[in-house]
Image 1 (cartoon, rainbow, N blue to C red):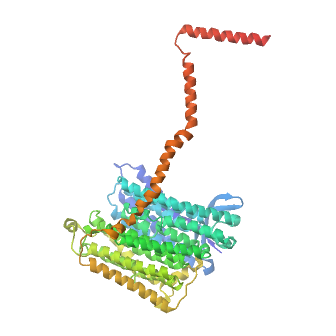
Image 2: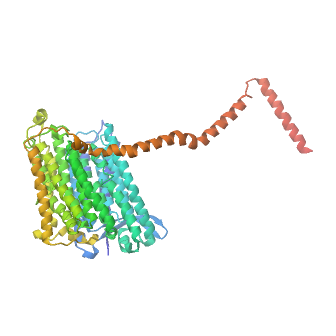
Image 3: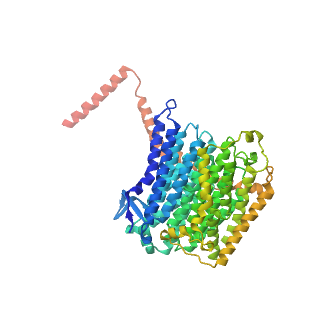
Amino acid sequence: MAQNVSYLGMIPLLPLIGAAVVGILHLATCKKKRLPDQLYAVLACSTPILTFVLAVKVFFDLNGLPVDGRALTHEVFTWFEVGEMNISMGFLADPLSSLMLLFVTFTASLIHIYSIGYMAGDESFAKFFAYLNLFLGSMLILVLGNGPVVMFVGWEGVGLCSYLLISYYSEDRSNVLAGNKAFIVNRIGDFGFVLGMAFLFWAIGDSGFDYISLKTNAHMLAPATVTLVCLLLFVGATGKSAQIPLYVWLPDAMAGPTPVSALIHAATMVTAGVYMVARFSFLYVHVPTVGLIVAWTGILTALVSAIYGMFQNDIKKVLAYSTVSQLGYMFAGVGLAAYSAGIFHVFTHAFFKALLFLGAGSVIYALHHEQNIWKMGGLKTKLPLTYKTMLIGSLALAGCPPFSGFFSKDEILYSALASGHTGIWVVGVLVAGMTAYYTFRMIFVVFHGSPRDAHAYEHAHEPPAVMTVPLVILAIGALFAGFLNLPSLFGGSQQVTHWLAPSLAEHAHEASHSIEIIAIAASVAAFAIGIFIAYRKFGKGAEEPVYSGFSSFAYHTFRINELYDVLFVRPYKAIGSAIGNLIDAHVTDGPVQLIVWFYRQFGSTFKLLQVGYVRVYAIYMIIGLSVMSYLLTQSFK
């Protein structure tokens, strides 16, 4: 039986209040009477910290409940009624959402603090923090929503905030276009989400549309309906979590300030699709064919984006494609019904990816917003703390034992091998080697060798403590978070898996320790080979390569954006132009124009009678009186 707690509603409400207060204060003050940035920083940073405190309380409250009743609920109000069915604006905290709450609020708090230093002196400092708070509030609604309808409110909220934050530097048209691209591509995916919810609503009917009711009544659904709903929901996930074919928006999202990249890519918006699939595990577990589609889509996305990452020159785009690749691993996990493995990788990824993006922000900050890695070099002596923390994040991303990324990624690969999906495992191991290569290509080029820009190198310096302390905290998480789900092979008890078990309907993939050892050995070998190749090519310095052939094709991301432009954008614009020039002009506007023409002709006819002479108007009066006299005479006969 779920326990009702009123404080649950405060978790998403706090950052929304923060966004409103900071935003109103920003709008109410002019530039001449601008409030101190420190005030906005305190107001904006206090809300994620308070939500983290409440998230910890949620965790301990759940831990004190019986395993089969670990759920906290709070119904705020009845949103709307459809027949006998009520849709409430309510929240649900169970083991799955509580884990998401912990690392979302924790990383968001650190990113908010880091932003104080990174955004110092920005004219729209307050607006930026209002957007960050609004983004966090939307993500918390998504995570805590007690049903798909409430989840969709947060789902759309993070989509809106991503547009606002990606196009934050709106003076540059390319940034606005990047924000538009993210918004439009996400709407394509959201159309699938809405259709999936509609079919699920139609099929479940009055049995209830919150997660608890849906899970209880899932057996009522026909297999074809479950298949259709799961496919449509996954379409929504491909948009939000940047999977093939809707991944093209995420690299362009680098147009926003670096803390935005960290917030979007680490633990919030892009992981929403993985969370949604795990939340609906009670449906996906019954359609393994759809699960395989999810898994293969994920692992192929991981492969393609890893290829792109190997050739990028922008430090943030290298990390962006690594995010797409790691999301592919997560979908491979949840697609194989290893939901806890997929969510565990979401958990560890939050630490090392936030660390890497914020570390990249420190490099960019030190080099006066230079992002091309081939204009860097030798920075480990100038930025020693940034270098050490980014090295830890890179080892975690590349899957080096005993860093966190090794345990979570290996669990997904082990699940693929243990379940007999050797093809997915082979591609996953290959991607692991490629990840190690492009990650340490970035580290070697940026921090090792000789400076490529002497002037920028000379003026480079470590950022202030408000930016470096979050790096150290995240580095600790990137190093040790993996031990929370240590497998039995290493003497662990997989605490995260056991914690998530009541919320997930997964299939345990059991295999001998020899299979697990093979999976681990392959992952470690791929990691070692990837780093070795990167060191041989870039470890002692290298010049910017000239790309040609396949490398040029990969650098330009296989021309996918150009292909989409030809296949979709230009035809869409042509159709819109045709509608504007033909249908709008002649069909839609035709009746209106006809009425206007009629009144003009009518007016022109009467204009002939308006000659402006008094004698003519006197004749009109005599004629009118004569007609009226005649009509009156006839009426009395």
